[in-house]
Length: 141
Length: 321
Image (cartoon, rainbow over all chains, first blue to last red; front, side):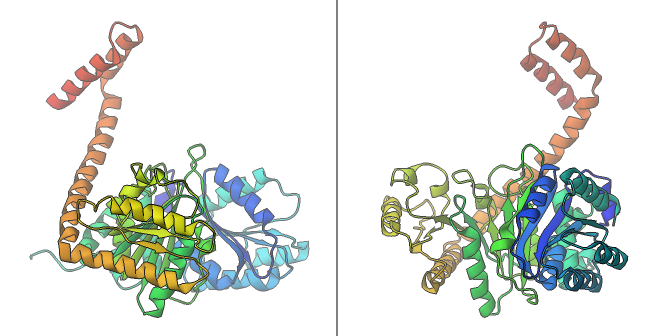
C-alpha cells in the first residue's frame, strides 16, 4: 500500500491545509482550500492556531499526500522547520510540504533548503498553486 | 479452526496500535486498493462489535460539537474513541473540503483518540462507501466507541442506519412544525433524538413536538426514542445524551435486536459486495461485447428500442460466452 501503488489509480489527492501558530488571518488558506477542492482534491481544512504537533498528527490520521501551511505572522522560521522535524520523527517525512504567506526571500531560501518543496507569496496565482500541488502530490513523495 | 492465526503485516500493525498503518488501511479501503481486501479479511474476527454511534441531522445543528464533547467525556472515563466525519464530495469536481476537524478539540498527545475525515465520493445517504469497513477497522484497532458523523444534508442521510448501532438524530429549535416530524426518513431512523442549542428560544416546543411524535407509538422493535435537550455550553445535557445512547445499546442486547439487526445488516453487506463485483465485471464484459455495437446501431437507427436491446444483451450474458 505505498503511494506509488496509489499513483496508478486516479484517486483524489488528499491535502491538509493548516495555519500554524498565532495568526488569525485565514482568508488566504480558505481561498487556496477552495481552489484545490475545485481541482478535485479532498482538502482537510484544519483551521486556525494549530501547533506543529497537531498538524503532523492530522497529517498522519488523514493519510494526506500533501501539506499546505499558511502563515502570515512572521513566525515561519520557528514553526515550519518544527513541522518538518516532527513529520520525520513520525516517519511521514516523505509527505511534501508547501507554504504560503509573507515569507521574505532569504527565509524562503532557507526553508526550501530545510525541505519545504514550494513557497508562494503574495501575487502567486491559484493556477500556479494548484499545478504545483498536483505535481508534488503525484510525484513529490 | 485450522485457519492460521498469523496476520498480514499491515493487519498486525493495526492491531498493535500503529496509527499510520490504520490511516493507510482506511485510504486503501476508500480507494478500493487491492491491499484493503486481505487486511479487512484478517481483521474481521478481531472486531468486538463496539458501539458505533451515528450522528445525523441537518447542516449546522451541532453534530461535530456534540461528538467533540462526548469524546471528551469518554476520554475522562479512559475509553478510547474514534471519529469518522463524512463531508460531501463535489459532484462537479470530485473535490471536497473536509472541515470537521475545526470543531474538534486538539488532543495532539492523546493516543486514545483517532479522527478521520472522509469525503462521500458520490455515495448518497450521508456516508461514504468506505465508512462501514472503516468503522470495522477502528473497532479492530481497539477503539471502544466509534462515532460516525454524516454529511448533514437532512432528510436523506439514512445510510447511517446500516452502520451505526445507535443513531442520534440532532435537531435544533425552529426547524418546522410537528407535521415535519411525521414525514418519512430522518424521523424514522432515530434511536435517540437530540434537540441541540437549548439555549435558544423554542427548544421546549421542539422537544414537545418530538415527544408527540414518539407518543404516536413505539417502533417495530419496541424501542421508544428518548428526547434529550443539549447545549454545548452546558455539560448536563451532554451527560444525559450519553446516558440515552448507552440505554439504547443495552436495549439492543437485552431485546435481541443487536444480533437480529446484525444478521440483516451482514446479509445486505454480503449481497451488496457480490452485486458491486458482478456489476463491475458485467459492465466491463458488456463494454467489450461485440453484440453491443450491433444492437446499438439498431437502436440508433430506431429499428430497435433500448429495452429490447437490453433484454437481448442480458439473455446473452445469462447464457454465458
